[in-house]
Amino acid sequence: MKSSACLIVNPVSGSFSKGRLKQVESILKRKYSLLEVFFTEAQGDALKKAREASNRGFSLVVAFGGDGTLNEVINGVAHSDTVVGFIPSGTTNVFAKETGIPDDPMAATELILKGTPRQIHAGFINRERLFVLMAGVGFDAEAVCGVRPVVKRYLGKLSYILSGLEVLIKNPLNQLEVTVDNQKRIGCSGIIICNASKYAGNFSICPDASIKAPELQAVLFGSPTRVATLRYILGILTGKHIKYKDTIFLKGRDFLIQGSSFVQIDGDCYGTLPVEVSLIENVVKVIF
Image 1 (cartoon, rainbow, N blue to C red):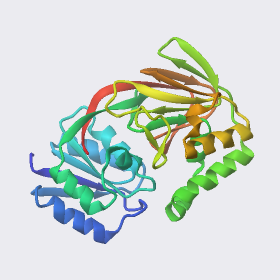
Image 2: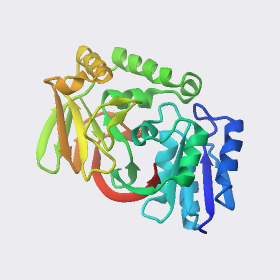
Image 3: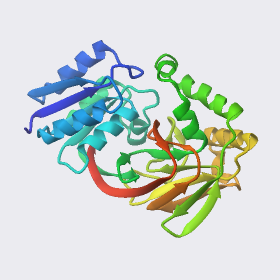
Image 4: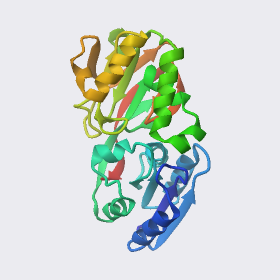
């Protein structure tokens, strides 16, 4: 099915509109004689549909939504010949910023028709779920998992800020233990494992991380106090966190994180500790 494409749409993503969808469909039909459109209704729908499309032999699956929708699509087609395209319409669209995919849906769709698929690496958490951008434990995960879907739909990025403030005020962080490549053990209050350099938009949290590099990078935050957490947040916003004495940067392919905390991957709540994170190379082809 060389000229077949499946367009998976998250209709509640930040900047989605029916008018844009019609334009996207029109562009894709210039190349793909068979275009199947699917609308997600609940978490996990995009993953199931992407897997189904891949098993049916679709040559292209396009995620029209945010980073969470893209994450599900990549998990659905991983280790297959199906190529993934991304039309960003989410809250932060970190993958688009990381790879240079245009914010404009029509321009992103044109790129899908003209661009070249490239193999990317991905993180693998608990041997069951891939992530493309990052896995976070500690403050950022508590904030992400505290966001209420209804609030996110109406307030967008502001919903994460409000949730973060709530965590900062009410929930003191717990001490975590991180083991890297089965050797080095480090205590910290939070960790973000990066497969890409961008974070929460255009902020660069692990400057040397890349979806094309054969390793994961991580930043560990030392102190669990509210004052220190606020300083880490401001450091990320200004880029000064890389110079803090109580932040540690590491490279590795395998991480074990133990303690008590929520876990987020690619900006969506995943679950709770403990987790194992590893790198899988050449997991999927994405156009960017």
